[in-house]
Image (tube, rainbow over all chains, first blue to last red; front, side, top):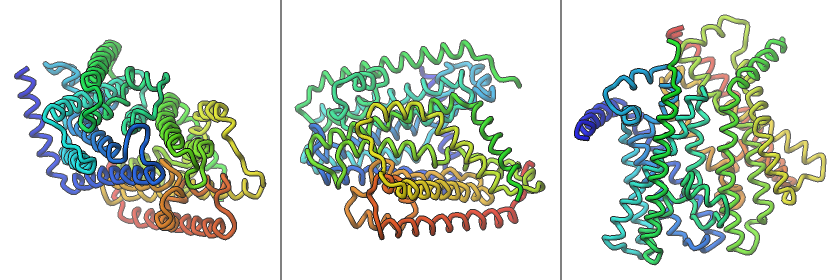
Length: 265
Length: 268
């Protein structure tokens, strides 16, 4: 464990140095994310021109939800996204061989090489929005709620990571894999919607348990902004879904590795 | 001009794409998730409101989003800009410059074949959805509306293609075009009508959007098809769309000409 932490520290340092040598690019990526975020706020404004609430969610609760989604998504992107998104390329070119030869866990090796500082700054924007929304809701959460929120955000990051890993692992079978990376964005597209819009049917079940994108941001947002919701139940649901996602994606990764035959070099 | 060589390129494009059918199939499958999200959030909103939203009822809204997916598949380039930029960066462009071949015509043929196959791949799931929502479907009564909607659709496709092409031309000057592509893509995503019909925005916003090109990349042909624009407004819209098409084409041509002069044929 200590060794992995040390390795990770070195990778982080290298990554920050590399990133600081492309400052313009760094700023532009931040701008992209900010634009994206602004668009979502406009979307909420437009919707709430016509209604006062969506299901049991008020406008500022939805803003809290979108801010939370931003926070979780950006933390995931900062630590894992670039690395995991690069796996199909490693498989296609056979460079994965070198990663497998390293004296460490293969999943750790492919998941942790680069780190996105711009994403971390954008995560702070998410935090700002969350605090702003809480102020507009006139809610000041207790210490317990904030702690639960932080745990839930961490679980959310784990879900993001696992789903993305499972998607790109398909690239062991499918050579051209841009579609898989798009799959990540498409799936998490619905994560920023209030959970109550999904009704009670099969769709809600599948996307709350099997591909648990609905609960990823909704449960943390409920824990922080709505003291009346049953916190232990919600947290247990998210923890269960996250553990399941992590275990299944890791099993799938190992299953795929077994059939990896490397690219002809 | 000899068109047969471009027809051949079109055919090569079809074959190339078919090799990657899994990629296509997955993309179209995952593409259904945001659609489901849109349908469900509007179901909740109409349920809450119990009345129309800017002239749309729930049925019209669902039909709008189905059309959005169809039109998006028909006109939005998926990989063209990356491929063109790669041609420039890796020096592949050399092979085109020495042949009696118009690069823009070549890319346009490829674009057309990609869009055709992509639409065919997504047609089956989409047709199933349209059938499921069949009582929501309305089509224009007059042939004139059909014709205008298709003309506008063709212009939307060309605008999107020229925009993608122009963006890719930046690769003549800068190494990495992805940030610029994604900035424009964010504008297109929110302002072309993908996540909500633009005419439900407050009037001044919608008005301001009508002079920008994004409306004409997706929303405008759909709103003609749905019979939401008429008369003078329709004519004005078509004129603005044609103007943007002309501008996009000129920019694409100019950037190519300038770019080739700047080109250093790295690695080719």
